Image (tube, rainbow, N blue to C red; front, side, top):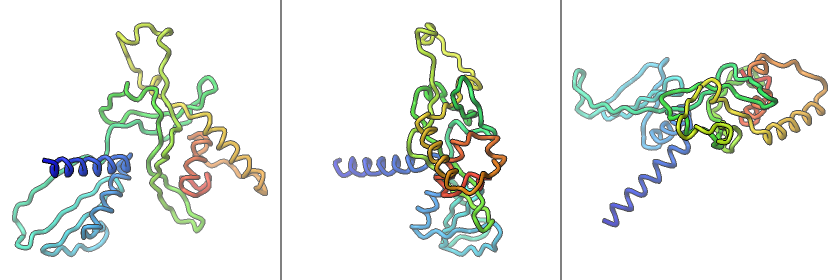
Length: 236
């Protein structure tokens, strides 16, 4: 019994570690890729010729967010049956909109939309991080992408105080457009403004703002640029 409990505990710890390292489908697939490669699976690419062999173990990735892995039996022949297991790589979350720049009452807000069937009231008054995939242009002109996971709280979706809405505990109606908008943390804003000013001082001249700065707050772009080790103007 002790051995079984220890095995279960180890598996649970490993699963939770995987969940914590997979905030998005992109991170999930990347972690699955690492695991598959470590146990002998070979990656297949869509644009290449596939040479499938008996006893071979393979996987293919689609758009960084979907992964399919399979192992071929030693006696497998064309037309034989196969067993299939499937699971999600994503989960309900709040997704940053293509145009996220929003400001109300001097607060910097990030426009988000609901993805999946989430229990949205559980997102209120929590410290929120940011994760996803960022495309940017490298100094040599080539396009690169980076999986971002900001591992510190930078956003929050506040709720109104109960003395301003007495029936909150009896009736909670969520307007997704108005109530589920994230506020960008002011502390982060101050730090990024300071960083931006220092860079501007060291610069020989002012650069024109790219199109992305019209769609997203400069503080948010600066944060993403620091995570990707690039300039804000390079973000696509």
